[in-house]
View 1 (cartoon, rainbow, N blue to C red):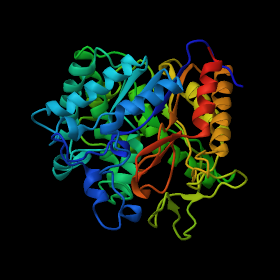
View 2 (cartoon, rainbow, N blue to C red; view 1 turned 120 degrees about the horizontal axis):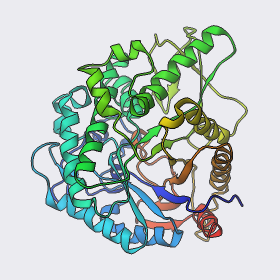
View 3 (tube, one colour; view 1 turned 30 degrees about the horizontal axis):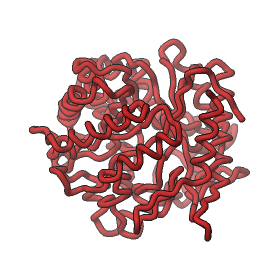
Length: 451
């Protein structure tokens, strides 16, 4: 069994819209995901997060599962429309009360609360006013961060203003596969800038409210050129700048990866970058799989997570062969995580604070057998391989401080609804019964073995 340095933080993670349900209760306002999932044809099988895993009512049961699991931290997200129903203006006390109760329950269980302020659920009224294309949204986000920081800052032990702004930019605004469903291609680049500005403003707002230990949870992946041909290498480099450097360089270095991207950004970019580059206590990396990219060939566009890509992109995506696949069809490449971690050490050097793997996990079609047992051997192998990759990165000098499994429980998986199961805990959506899978017990035993 792989061992880790003393003090290594073991955690698990979820997101509000994916598990909470209760979308119409206690003053919560509508989010873009309520609107998107209610639009016919946008989400597989017409699924929505209206009930999800009913965590809003069952959080105590879920915290008890985490206590038995033995995790030191729980990464959850706070629903912006639950706290500020219209995205701006008055705070909803009942919304904050829920997270107050959740945080207290976690603290009583000896689990450090790790809060994400934005996991893609923009309040619908803000989207109606332009969403992340509108600079004003960043300032409304900072106000929301202040309200949450003032209420929970004395007990939350890790803060992430943003989760995966790359995914919101690419899937939400560039190709339309996620909420709010816009298809703007490169005209979506201001979305990236405004989210990063929101992150910087929220970081400052949280510190002013007395919160400490602030980072970000960014999605990163190795980009493999399709060949050694110069055109393929150039295309891969361009895509790497667009999905990796675009979201890390401004935060860690205070600049965009190239002048072309910087020139596409709105507003007083140089002044904004000083805010975006506000110092962080740590940096979070979410990893799932690498991507192989080549020069455009004019072939029919592929799909990414079920979303068809448009013609005319400056690169082609190619299937990576020779590796197993998850149930979602994602390639299983544990060493890709080591590659990302060592790349960050090499690229950012002293500008890189301590690192946490803030998401890593896999979906398989897990079902109980006739005895109620869920033998998800493939997930155990996946997690074991990726943790060995983290250990290898540590041995190569990367300062990795912790690891969060995605996800604690099966949940609403965005545009593919309930068709994919990422959880350590199985959810029967008809009864809301929670059943720990074999991977849950494997992870529990791994954590205990570190003590």
